[in-house]
Length: 114
Image (cartoon, rainbow, N blue to C red; front, side):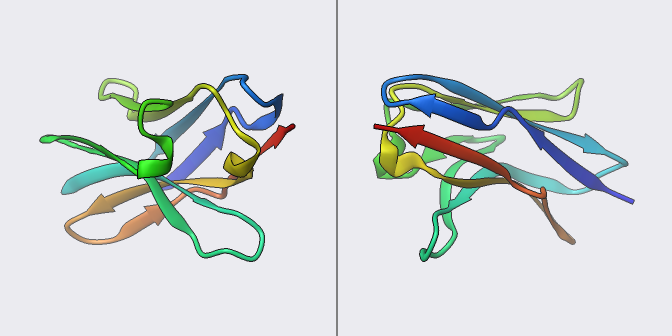
């Protein structure tokens, strides 16, 4: 059974940094993309960043501040978040897209205080 386990969320002041990690347990086949989504209260879940074999894409709101990376050996994807703003406050979910199932993590809360 595949599970995605996130860590690294927390409370930080505006301008601060956090690093999220998402580790996979179990075997994944046909991996296409690894990504991070977020959902703020009362809002729809939105794509923050995604990484594929062809490169990375970012939401306009995080470009230049967030960096997505991955460690193939550890089956882990990371999201480095710098210059955090109160509007970045949300539950962050990692997401693995495959040629078959789509996998989601349980979510980790990120709160940015002003």
